[in-house]
Image (cartoon, rainbow, N blue to C red; front, side, top):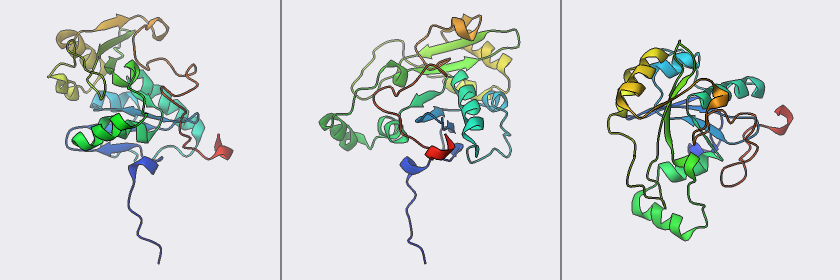
Amino acid sequence: CPPNLVYHPRRDFTRRISWDPLAIRVYGWPSSGGVVILEDASPADFHFLSLDRMQPPMLRHESCEAEDVFCEKLLLLGAKWWDSMARYLLLNFGDGYANIAALEESDEPLPPMRERHWVSVAWPSTGGLVVAEFDTNMWGVEIEKELVPDDVARLRLCIGMDGKAQILKERFRWTTWSSLKDYQGSTFIGCWGSKKSGEVGQFQQTWPTHLT
């Protein structure tokens, strides 16, 4: 019989969605490499991505062309484009002090602004986009002001983009941009087509070379 292989998320390059008690995450796998991850996806985000909330797909598209289209839409919602799944897990799911000590002894680069920033995006029916951005504390970087508000979980109640835009405007510091090309924030929104390399290193390739 085959060996009993232990599941290892760093080598999982096909999953579309993951669930945990605090959040729903949506993953995209660009043909150029890395992984695009949308944290804490809401019903409004699922609708924007044309994902069935009751029976969402659990695996990525079979073609890299279709997957690239999906990744571009993920970025429009404020998803982050990580160099690799390992980099994402290292900075977001550390094992307490032991993990921090290991990071400090390594040559792992500190997280730049685009890796740190929390962002939420709405595309209301009236046009344009509404964006809320806040910095976060990560290993090696401590921010003392303008951090993510405590009540961002309100966004999980949004079932449409108009409602999401309303909550962003009523509850959070926000900016409205008339179009994607006008956006001048500090996130990955609109970087599709211009981003050719990782934030701190090389992209990890997640597609067979004959498919890209």
